[in-house]
Image (cartoon, rainbow, N blue to C red):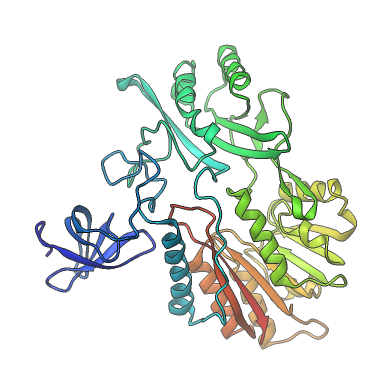
Length: 453
């Protein structure tokens, strides 16, 4: 058992940004706030047979990787914001930890070792978050409204006045938003504000989606309109599910993001899935197309195509792209984006459940030279399994893609699917790398390239 006065030497750090040490008994101790090479004292909060977990209380040897957090709400204290876990760690070291997590996951979970590691995709570490879901709570006893992320290890909303990972204009709007909600008739029935930022030549387009559980009064609608006019934001209202989202009024331009290297503008609704970090997304798209090594006569399938984030750039370089997505509404908006960008003749879209896909159904989509796979956190297990079945029992007239570029937001499901592709479907993992989409957080985005063995 670790005593409060025992000094521990931190040996490493895990993906949750916890320092890892061993106490005098040899038991592993996970320490929030500690970095490799440091000597620390710990207040243990959890004890198990094989490990303990606690919080740093004293530090006598500081790591050169330690840096001053850029947000006043970051920390280990009660009430600290839980949105970021790594602000005390130098940004390049954050990326190194994520890369190690990717490599370890592939090796330990699926016995896959990439032939080469790609250079990490990095970008701005502050003001990058163009999408966010902010919780709202009216605290009647304190006479205030809280808007922000949840506290560390808590369901309570952190008392935030700024958020440096949000665009500066949005961060500066947090306190005025609190005052606005506090003045509204329905302040106890407004649980959430969702942020979505679009891009225009004249500047960002900021949309705020207000989730409301009861119809808004005329006075509340007027308050929202006045706030929007004063701060240059557009309000969207969401009385029920995502499909119920609608504009408070028609003022202001539509939301869109751009992929200027391909001459593309991609309109979207604020509840549509788009990448939170537009700068990183541009680099990710460019890197993915480069890894696909596209040719003008090729046919490509984009699995989990969303709004066409990869489909449309690919269509500028090949004969045909088939984009497949689970939502008919998203597929329709993908078609509209293709038409708007003059790519309808080279694209085709289809809606289907990609978590249920047989080998025969896969064959029905026809041969493709290359695949781009960009699934949600659940991964693309059905797709990888179908490929494995076809490798074991080939179908006449069908050949698998020569190359697959897999973009992942969950290293565990990437590792699982990589194991299927490499050990059962006849592929080799020729490259892999991390994408630092969410600086200062423990979230690991990554990509991997699979070539026919």
